[in-house]
Length: 414
Image 1 (cartoon, helix red, strand yellow):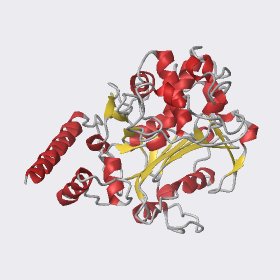
Image 2 (tube, one colour):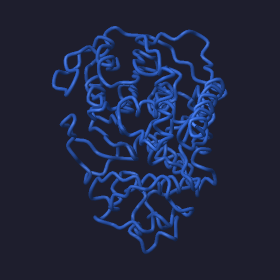
Image 3 (cartoon, rainbow, N blue to C red):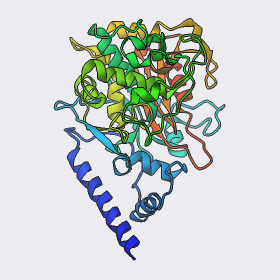
Image 4 (cartoon, rainbow, N blue to C red):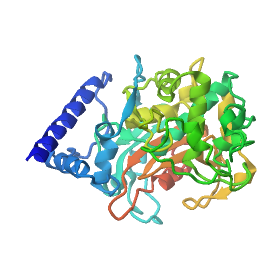
């Protein structure tokens, strides 16, 4: 009986926190948006109760399907986190929905949903939300499995917030990315990190054995955890994704700036892009930022606002957060890291934590479960989306579709 009462009180607490948080982040938009919601009605009380009961009894959210989607959309109820405060002057988007984008026909050679219109695809395949911004205006926006105001987990898309933070400090002359990481962290001398240039860590070619850092068991000296990492290949010679790369870069941001990673993002990125909602950032039991795993939790529009900062429309201000130098460095790729994309069969590179930099200068970052951020500076285009893999482990293929859209001619500048 006591266990049942405890579970009931815990669920009430979760729901109370949820309502308090939603109230705190009411939208500041002055006009009604034109997005599609496809009659999405959210989780029922029974579904919320069942999920919390599942977690309370020791269940894992990574069972895919709606359990994972509930976690993605209710991060604050489950994961320890800090808050990244919104801008006092949010950027309000102009909305120009385009039928030619909505009715764009998806290629037929997909695992699922081939030959559908874009609008039908997001409804029938594992998509939670999709937004497309061209020349600073929203041309498509739909939310088939989330509310527009929901904060949705970004997973490792957060890693490009890390690399952007490094670039901002680089622009200020406070970090030299040609120097080895042990130049800034004496404790890493004698480890696999010794002699590894920061630029190679940014391009996910540190040569460090792939390490999965425990989210709840890390020590209270995270650099000490990293000293155990071993080198498997010379840095700068091979792409190898590792969450350890993003972790050491996060620690570097904190050391040089004197701020927590969350506070740095709030001060130098989030407020400056005109974020409409406060974001969440997962934190470890030792207090370190989980920028390399669960990462940030944001609205879809705010993730798109970040992507917009890399485009001509987002760089119109006198002091854009993305400098000419940063854009150049993203696309000034290491030729040793050339690879053929399994999704698009095109040549891609990794650079500044972006997982795919295409030869035409577009770049993309994807994440677990079907999240993605695609930026085409030359076309002034941003595509951002959220998704959840189903119980058959199938995710959306908006990474492929984003590339198709970019090359379709629909967004070529005059």
